[in-house]
Length: 152
Image 1 (cartoon, rainbow, N blue to C red):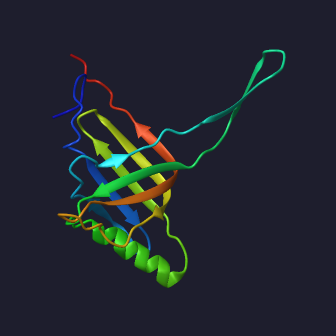
Image 2 (tube, rainbow, N blue to C red):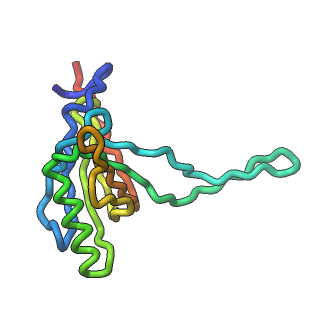
């Protein structure tokens, strides 16, 4: 269903990533954790200072844009992150990741530009069942592509 006022489901999310030279074709990320597909932490996008005379000074700053993805232990997409980590270890370098997140329920998409894997755990924690794995990527930029509502 197309997005619009009142729609907030995350069940229809589509995430595709590339990570050349390891993955030059888009890889669909799927098999998300039960209550956690992704988390996008708030960012401080300006520096502010208050002068002793009460005048506010502000400054624009570029910031790293973190985005964390959480996958079930059985997710077929864990192989994307494991292979990327193995390739980075072998090459002794980090590779850039590109991505697109599409949320039809809200009508928004996000273009993820020049990310790198910064948080990685090589295995799931084992409790009564294997626990989800979380992967953190820091992006150079996240571009929001909002929907344009259709005319009634």
